Length: 252
Ligand SMILES: [Ca+2]
Image (cartoon, rainbow, N blue to C red; front, top):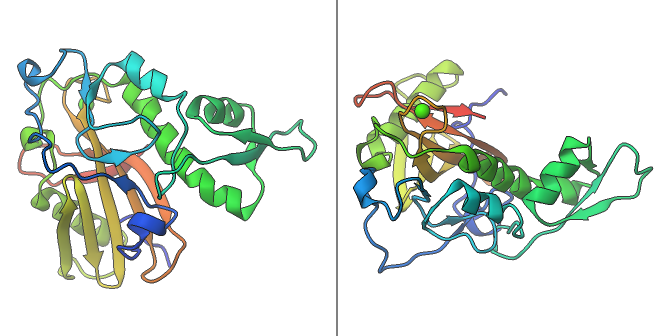
């Protein structure tokens, strides 16, 4: 039952309650997403969060420097309900004694030392750490894009649809002609349905993460079987070779 990142699913309710849930705050007065032109940014070397997705306490829709993203690694990782999380990790030398981890700085250090989550509950909570800490590590090193194939630095419905189609075809489940339903449920948050599968796509930031000056979209995908609670999350880049697409998702 190999499934691509898009083929899976998860109810919309997972937004609030599922393992892959992400807190999305809605600010009706938020300004329109800024163009990538440097003149439009608060500071030339900042990278902007492009949606209302929050990964750690204190994270807002704003434009930050690498140092400011680094500082967020010391903030508490939050879960699907917006509350700070703790995860218990045991290292190879801990002989069963787990350490409580709350921030990405703590989490990354523990994982680098070979630590891992022991219980099923910790494994579920750890998904939030994988997402938040994976994203922050990439944001720390990101640079403003000098050029992009994403108009306005954001994906549009055609981009998300092409990403879903590419995934469906590459995994050979469902014909390329399978109905693909794409809906933007919040700014930069997409719900993709292919047959029984449903995937949530959360755009986080548009920037140059690969050093070539061209922008990618850092995104989080949450996939799982329809009606199930088990979801698989993946941090990666939405990339396009040209303005005409297609768009692909490449896990990091
Ligand atoms: Ca790039």
